[in-house]
Image (tube, rainbow, N blue to C red; front, side, top):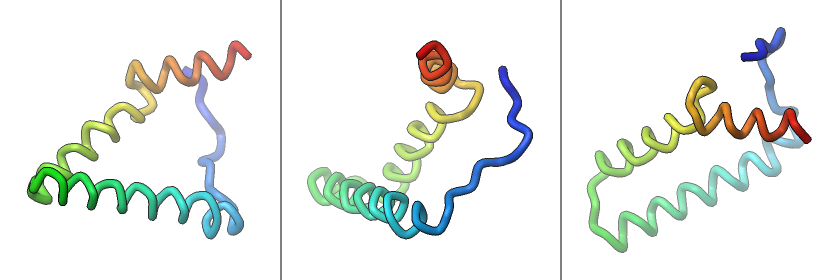
Length: 72
């Protein structure tokens, strides 16, 4: 796996733009899921953990995404 020398950080415009927008969207979707199913916060927490696992740098999903980016 390729090591990055510097940790990526979003700039101000990204923080107040796309990042804030996606954050709000995800929260709204999770609230909708909870309202539709009646699931507890613990389910949402575990659900997010499963999604988070797919984005771990050493997960198969992450490796495949990065491999696809590097072959373009």
